Length: 500
Image (cartoon, rainbow, N blue to C red; front, side):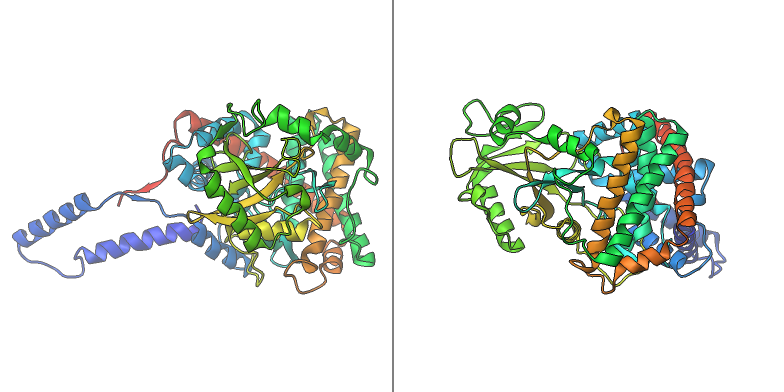
């Protein structure tokens, strides 16, 4: 852990010694014996406590680094100190799931152990604690927070037309734009190596294409301000994305019948992915109505009377969110024949992995589900109308529509050429999301020319990001080895505790 936490621990111990009586001398042995017994009794009576989260510690560390103070951030830890940092961070990030003995948490840890790319995807908190307070001089945007090749894809827009864009807003927050580029560069390097079996030389070329796509698009937006109107559709996308549109397309009736509905079309089927909870229909009817009202959603005609037809628990979906509660709510369509029903997903919202780590900023995206909904409204122009947030039993949930054509690309099907093309268009899509920060977001200055200026000279900027990615890859590989060794020893069956 960083210097901040160690300092607090040392201070606490010193305070305890002062309270134990070292400042006042006692002359009799009986008094000393009584004091020792009293101390022993207090120690035995003191309950074991759960370890407090370190978000506020890291917030202070971030602010000190951003202010130019010389400190030891965790990115510089090595050996056993780094291994303990990785262990503590993953325990903290999964504390609720570990305490609740969530089966999804165990499945997630097994997935993380088996794949470097999945480990990267599922440990955003570990990645961003290494960036704490950095790039404070760079322009702030609403960042996606978890950029990698699988977090771009096809999804419905407000008109229920498939578009290609960024598609995961769970970590979104206001931060330096470079944080998304750094995570994206590492994400493309890891995925191209593991999923695409590309050599390191090709990985570097793929990362360069991602960065070039971003910078070229940002220069266009700085000059022409077309970010609000741009949209990757089937008719105007590069070939690699047009292929994704074709692969993703599915007729709604077939999609519902093949993947979700029971044999009568009356509700969800029961299998290893879905557990119907039909008894909660009336309860979720109120949640859907609350969602629409609190988020100002204009209900489209295809949602019919917005009648909840069935509810199911969804198991085993996602990587970072494995083990978090997730519900599918079936809404009856206008035809009432099970051919045009729609599905709204309710997923438990978490605090962003970037919370407390970004340089100080006056922009606030909101908390949990509201923050995620804000990210979608800003970063996805004319997006899914059912993207929103609602509170259930005091717990924040984000919502979105599942769609027959919601899909992301099969990374193992890409050639080295199509990897480069895909990386380039992803860079362009990310630039559009960032450019919207001063249109639909809170940023109160023109971000595009600021980013263009901050990335000059371009070759040097690209070189710096690529070097960051290569160094981060070496660190990620070592962290993964530490994690796998710890998992074999059962390190993630329990959370960190404070014993004195």
